[in-house]
Image (cartoon, rainbow, N blue to C red; front, side):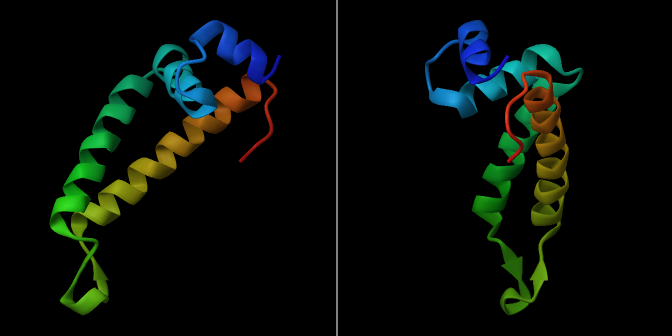
Amino acid sequence: MGTRELKARYGTNGGTAAALNRAIRAEIPGGAETLDVLKLAHQIVRRAGESEAGGRTPTIAQVFHDRLSAIANAMEAAVRLRYEMPAM
């Protein structure tokens, strides 16, 4: 398996990253919810700004976003392992 199999199963629209996201949503329990919340957290961080107090302290939104990103990255790693794709 590999990128070709992943794209054959989840479509070629949007490239490998989009296919990985579709695979996470379909194959990983809680994947769809995690990606949805991560998207919202990203929007909150963009609105709130990345840091407070002159750039010294990350906002709660930034910390939340970073933790969700770590979870989504672990999910992506699981899909990459399943499809025998190289790790990022």
